[in-house]
Structure formats: structure tokens, C-alpha cells
Length: 594
Image 1 (cartoon, rainbow, N blue to C red):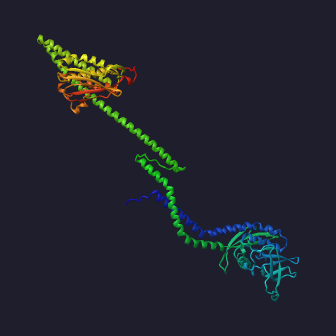
Image 2 (cartoon, rainbow, N blue to C red; image 1 turned 90 degrees about the vertical axis):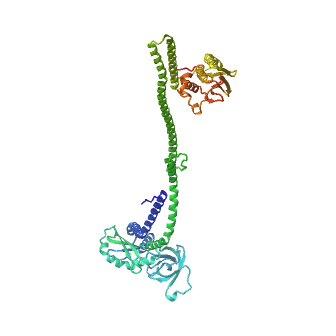
């Protein structure tokens, strides 16, 4: 079964989605199972720190219950907890931490707010020092300084309070202690709950609490049997007036329970929306992150296929941009290296082909030399044997002439081979100078007067008046000797050989044309090869070594000449070009290696 191939976009999308979804799930699980415990530990730690300083403050108070109530009320508002103080027998101290102090007839009156009878709604909102209030209540001391309030209002009610045995007082608040707005939603209930219900629970924990060491803490979780609300209790033992006392801080866990319940309900509705958003964000994120990777992958793929024409176009100043620049640099260097290798391979291939060609030429040369020397040696041997056998006297002279003729041919062949080997070894350097070609042609033509006369061939010259060229006169004479000798050998009897010259820009083209047999098209390009002859069966009758045109080719190549052969209407024409004297180049002092 073929394995499914996933690209990097899909992998990153899946990994991102799964990771974030698991993180979201862990957050939900933590909210469900650990948030309440975390809140409890944080709240207990806060209460413990606040309760550490209470014993010292409590010990410094004068024997005034109102001061103690005020201290406890301040601590309750600061910690959002209900506070109780018990003695060594776990009996609670009667505390009334909330009060209003007013001034009536230059006399301070204390309005205590009982925990059991009061609710937060019984108090006007936003009471502050300096506010004027009306209180209906009952005095509970002989000096009429402490009043138990029945009703508190900002404005005087229209009802008559005397009928109910109440006293109405309207005054300005000089001091107050009320539950803070940061307290639980019903602090009076919580405080009264501690006063009424915590006693039986303390009795159950009597042994553990009384065995506490001074300065130590214990924490417990308690459930209100009537409302089912959970509370956290922190108990701190401290020494007071030679005995042991305990301070209890009770705080509700209802807000965090409500918050966890609300979060759970909210998560049920929010999860589908979050999943959709998560899918979209994961897709966009994976696209953004993997786009440069995909681009770099395409560039690397093209590089793997040796295509370096298109570069990666990432210009960001980060690792992707740096990698893109490195890839482009690598591509450029690889491209240049491959081009260099290709050029080197071409050069090596050309060198190998040249060596193979040279090897082939060497073999052909050996074969041709063997063939070319075999015939004259055979002739020399035959005529030498005739002389040895003492042939008739009248034949001896002819035999000697044949032997000398064949020796001259072998000598000519050897000299041409030595000359050709110098050209092939590139051991020939030209001695260029300015000279008139017409003088060289006249000198060569004079040497061929006997051959021309024997075949009754006429030589016609048609050269420009100014025919000075920049070349090596000795080598050009060799070329003219070989081409003119070739034209004379293959010319028809009683025909004409024409030597002409014509200017072509900075060159002069010389043309040697005879009237004779044509050369086939497939042989026109091969006549410049060594030992190649158009008619091998008749070469000895016409003379020549078969190396003349090969030597001409090398000389004309050194001169940068354009040369060739072509069939004309009546025969064959050879042509070559030489640079005019006005456009000379090179060095007059070039030397020749021989």
C-alpha cells in the first residue's frame, strides 16, 4: 500500500491546530478541576499573611471593646473574610465590628449594627463621614450613648416612631465602619453565620485546635449545612495575656464556584466558535510560515535538475532570507562551476579527438611512407641488380639515370615529410615582411619554363599594380611553387594557366587556374590531406610526393588566409588570400624554429 505523502503546509497546519486545541483543552480542564483549588490556596495565603500582624495590634489595644471591634472590622474589610476570636476553651468573643458614630447635642453616640438582624439592603448606599442620616432605634445603655438601630434612612420618614417605642435621631456621621464594597454579596449573613454555626464545628475540632503551637496555622474547608455554600477557614493561634487565643478567618468560596460554573457553561458555547477561529488561524499561520519554505523547496528542486536560471526571491531579514541568499549564491557558483566543467570537458574532448586524430595520422603516415618508399626502393633494387648482373653496356647509362631519379624522388619525399612534421609540431614561426608577390611569381614561373614548354602550356599573369603583401616571402614562395607545380602537372597539353590577383577589402586574393580534368566534389575537401591524390594510379607519371598541398595548408593557416579549391568550366582553380601591406600586423623580428 502506497504511503500517503503530506506536504509541510498540511503538517504544520495539523500540528498547530492540535497543539493550540490541546492547550485550550488543558486550560478548560484546569479551570474545571484546579482553578477552585488555586483560588483557595491563594485566599488562604492572603488570610495567613494578614493574620500574622493581628496579635501584635491586638495586644497593644487599650481595654476598650469598641477599639477591638474597629480593628476586627478593618481586618474583615481588608481580607473579605468574617473574623472570630475565641479563647482557649473555644468560646467566641462577642464582636460588633460594624457601627456608625454620630454627634447629637455635643455628645457622641454609637450606633451598633447587629450582625444577625441587619442586611446590606437595610443601609442607604454610599454612606460616608459627613452625611446626615435619620436613625430610628432603641438605646441599650443607661446613658443613652449606644443605640440599636431599627431603621436607617437619609431623610426623616413621615411615620411617627413614638407609637412603637422607638427614638428618632437625625445627625451627621462623624465616623463609621461598614462592610466594604469589595466584600461578599451578603457580608452580614456570612458574619452571623460564623457567630452562630462555627461554634459546633469548633467543638468537633477541639483536640486538633487546642494542640496547635503558638504562631502556627491550620486551614480547613467547611460547608454551610443550610445553603450548601463552601467556606475556607484559617485558624491562627497566638498568646494573649498569658493564655492561648485563636483568631478565625472565614471566607466564602461561592464566587469562585460560580465563576467556574459560568466558565463551564460559557465554554460549551464558545468552543465551536473557537474551533472555527482556530482552524482559520492555523491555516493562515501555516501558509505564512511555509510560504518561504515552499519557495526555497522549488528553488532547490530546480537546482537538483541543474536549472539555475531562476533565483529564490525571499528578501526578509531572517533565517529564511539568509538561506535564500545562500541558495542563490550556491546556485551561481554551481552554474559557473558547471559551465567551467563543460568548457573543460569540451577542451578535453577536443584534445582527445586531436590525439586520436594525430594517432590516426601517425598510422596513416607510417603506412603512406612505407607505401611511398616501397616502389622507388623496388625500382632501385631492380636496376641495381641489373647493373650487378653486368647488363649490356648501352643500358648501363639508362639504369644509372633511373636509379638517380628514384633516389631524388625519395629525397624529395623525405624533405617534404620533415617540413610537414615541423608544421604539425607547430615549430614554424613566420618572418613577415612587406614584399611584392609579382616578383615571387616571376621567379617561380622561370623555374617552371622547361615543364611548361614540354606540355606547350602558356602562363598568363593578371596581377594588380600594387601587390605588396605582409607575409613570409619564403613560405609564400613554397605555396606558389606547390600550387603552380600541381597546376602544370594536371594541365592539358597546349592549354593555359592563369595567375590572377584581386583586392577584397584589406586582402588580396590570388588565384591559380588551369585547364584540365575536374576533381569530384567529395574529393575537393580531401586534397589538402597528406598523401591524398585524386588519381593514385597516375601519380608517378605526373610526379609529386602527395604532401605539397598539406604543406600549403599549414603555411596559409599560419598566415590566417582564406584558401580553397573549386572546379571551373574548363579545369580547377586554387585560391588564397594575403593581407595587404597597408594593414600589416605582427612582428618584423619573428623567428623561425627549424
